[in-house]
Image (cartoon, rainbow, N blue to C red; front, side, top):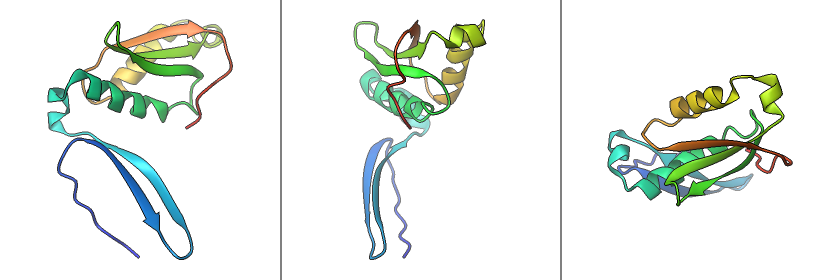
Length: 118
């Protein structure tokens, strides 16, 4: 079975699929040209969701919205510093390019087990 949905506004959308053989659910973050005009908190929520999808590829320990700094806080396992001498620049560039709108990103390095999975 196929269904077509038209979404006309930037934001988060949850979906649920009910089918005889299988079902599923998830969350979609839709970004568009007007995303930059959204309130900063909403942009940070969308940015967090985008970066969360990269947790399987890189050693993200924690990810959250830092309201004090008004930024997306990304904590990377400090072991990565041994593998990549320019790790801070690498991650700033990676996540700035991954997020298609303007938000402040704060990268920190710490210890701990990888807490996120994609």
